[in-house]
Image 1 (cartoon, rainbow, N blue to C red):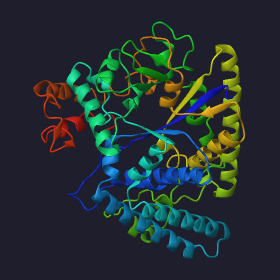
Image 2: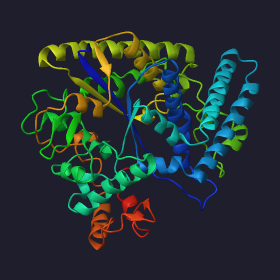
Image 3: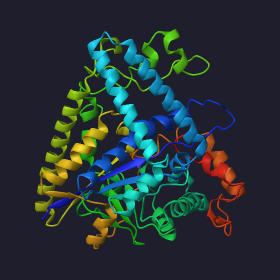
Image 4: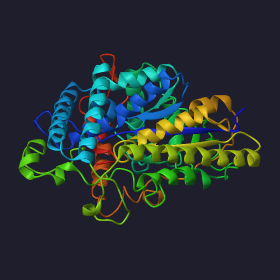
Length: 466
């Protein structure tokens, strides 16, 4: 029997970008890159686990803006145009480097990777949300919701209807998308303020995530720190982020993604190739941009880009397996110790941005794949679980008042309220005072969830990531 549990939680979100009035918009490529480098590789990873008979448990939040973009026919068409040009470029690169052994090896590697991504895209008939939902139906994937437009809730609190709108629209959107109500929510930026749990309870949400200090400084102090959820007075549970496991993945100094053999994110063909050669594959007005084709590895932490050596995906994948084994070993040691100390089964919650895996850290999906397989087949100290399943199996917890917190800079609100952006909040507050973004009696129109047609811009203006 397992001594404790590990919960891997990925937050999949991008700002809402859709410009039908323009034939090309660079910001739309954020979505296209995430589809090709993160969302499809994650689906392929889960398909591999299912193929190999693994009853795996992974948790993801899919935000309303991301779901809306993934299901938008215009953006789907534009992704296909974007990715077709990328495949055309790598085919040209393959011919261009026929006489260079290592570069030819890399171009052929990318050719195979891009073909695999395209095959998965076509296999799911362009509907990645439906593909993720299929794993949720078998309880392998737990899908969380988020704020309607990723609004930073603590800075909206003086207008309770604005907070309620962010949450109610999100819940309604989830119900319309997946046919059931969400159990949990990834709070935008993991940002919490005292009293937010009351609104969460009103819209039917059962639990949320906070950064570790949101629990460590709760009143009263939780007996088990971040290694067990807590209940708020209204019965909504809070899970805290584990600092140790976060550092091993997130930290720019000691985290896995900075290893020298991994792919260098900032050295891209779009900036390296001869201008006339690359011009058909950059912006229409001739500005260079990232293409996603990168031939070099990190090599060394303090090296300039011109000193980077050629990347080798074989050795990078080997290193990802080594790092996954190290992460699993550390969690075994951690959970053994916590189980002995607590006298009950702890849960170690590991939340990360989904886009870290594949987009920013190219080897991230390999790391997750190896980690889940090693956790499933190679050890019995911990089991990987969902947050909802843990609450169901462990229904009794301490009641506390979590501390105001976020997972941003300095752990509070500094990043979202400072001298560079304070000007926007009087406008947001004035808009909220003039009219509620979610007036009572207008939650559904013609059977579909969504705000009245005059309100979406206010919700979009509240987004935390613009």
